[in-house]
Image (tube, rainbow, N blue to C red; front, side, top):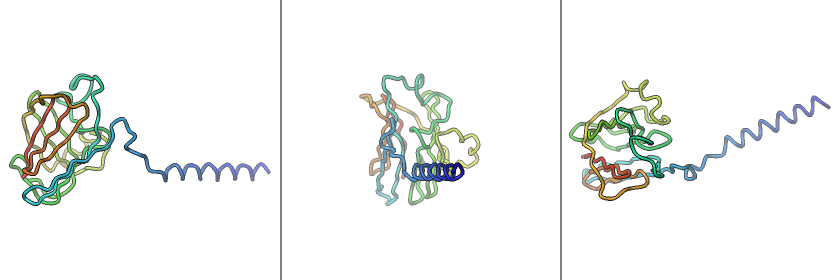
Amino acid sequence: MKKALSVLLLITAVTINLAACAQKEDKSKRPSPPATATQTLASGATVTINYSQPALKGRTIGKDVEPKDGEVWRTGANEATTFEVNKEVKIEGKTLPAGKYAFFTIANGGEWTLIFNKVWDTWGAFDYSKNKDQDALQVKVKSGTNSSSVERLTYSIDKGGKVSLMWGTLKVDFNVK
């Protein structure tokens, strides 16, 4: 009887565990929900940015929340932000082959380094130092300011290829052609 009860408990535990693993997490319920910016450019290339939108919630960028000067940022929340293009493009005049990339940034005052890394399926920027050699492209751009504050990190892409990252009064633009 004891043996049968033990086997029954083991089967129940395994079944519950499998059912829990089979259910997908509803990412829209996260504090930093998923978002997508996508645009087909005049050149015919489609640019898609998948990211999670952290909120400021009264925090100060660079002090209480990323981006912090000199530190690699996943440029979103949760999983690394991905930047995908279906055709070769030029970012700030430098070539990026078609593909899907993790999009990281490093703020350094008013100058930002944009990083497109081939290891896109990663959580945050924690493993970036191990995958640095997988950078497909790095470019430098200047940051600016928004006239109004944006509570949640937001990306926009216009048909001309201008990509804008906006959060709080921070704005970082770069060109994709």
